[in-house]
Image 1 (cartoon, rainbow, N blue to C red):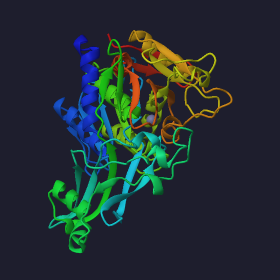
Image 2: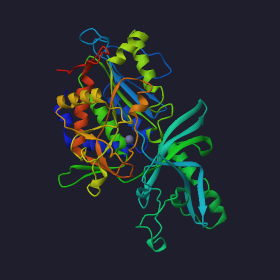
Image 3: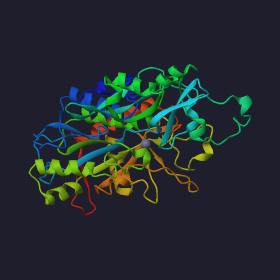
Length: 461
Ligand code: ZN
């Protein structure tokens, strides 16, 4: 590893908080990762142009501006130490989070002097956590220009919207559990309009007008939008020793950020290091930029081809490859200890969590679990294990979806957290550093296997 100072808890977690605050939606997470890669000297590749790759070079490519794959080639290009094909050392995470998409024709006038916005759920969030807090809008607009159709990122960087609760006096069940109807209960309040008819008319396009101004375009030139609500509550470190980190979007930007920090800190090894961040995990990964797409496979094929390889060398590389699917994990909740498995009980700041599931919703098996434990041992990082209680079905993630496109040994891991899919989640500050360390070791390591059940893991000196 290059510099030990890269692994300071305070510095890494302050960096993470800054990244979280600047990344309200996946488009911004990708834009911020691009800046980090540019600053480190990575070269941007476009999917639509020919790739010329240099040994030792660092590159990245995006898809839909909402998914990103960065990679670094070994200094000697093609083969690892003993002459076998260099494999891909991949960490895959996702940069989308559950939130609300703002619909077309969003404005709803209510009682003549309220304007609310029409929204729809994106992913499975805890709806309750979106009430009574400042919100705003971010995403992208697609605009007509003299040169053609252009995408622009837009983020309204001020407190703009709020979803007010119904008062307890009008809902006496509010503390006893009640069903939330998104269409009825959750339209955010955007503006007060005058009862005057002309003013109401003018206000009708006020939201789009605001977005247009932010994007530096005329409202009539906006052809379409992908806009979302985001929570304005800033992340913070808390707890007696500042041991916790609370923020929106920790799932899964904590893993995406730690993976990239490890990628940038790693020594150049003899395998091909790949930092892969998908979009749309929260809605099943089925888009062209999701884990079910060919994005990773396409990029790996093109790397192999640029190194002068063919289908035969690609298949050999895959046998020497490894995927860490990094998506946050559930810690035991202090108020609901009975919800956790009796013998696998991860805690915040207890170390990286390896996730298991007999039905292979998680990709971990004995081989990939063992290899990951060796990585963590070398990084001097503790591991914990997660299994669902046998009477509960758990969530799903991107690992097994991704391996249907790129079939290599894969482990599912995550950083332990609480309040998953709340608009304000909680995690352990120590664990962020541990994933950065483990990622740095992993990216510099190389794996050799002939596919005969034996694996040789070589760590960088
Ligand atoms: Zn996730």
